[in-house]
Length: 106
Image (cartoon, rainbow, N blue to C red):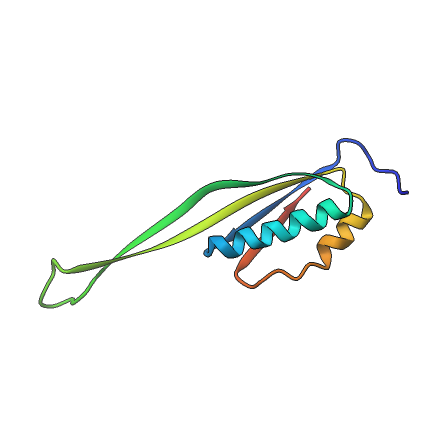
């Protein structure tokens, strides 16, 4: 068995517009990390970023008639402690769905 360094950890930050797809991706990452023997913490839900846009429906006649749209960006955070080479290989071979942005910080 390979010798792991103590205190080594990295965090994975997931972002996406669809919270169900994001939770499914986080579950896949957690399951593959657990199967390879690493200790994980998470997924931790971070605050949702809401961007609101107001648009005029008709620029000439009805100035008071407006339409509002919003984009919600959901975020999750996963900490992986004591990763082995097997853990890194398992995470690199994961096939995550489109629409989920993954950032890995060491």
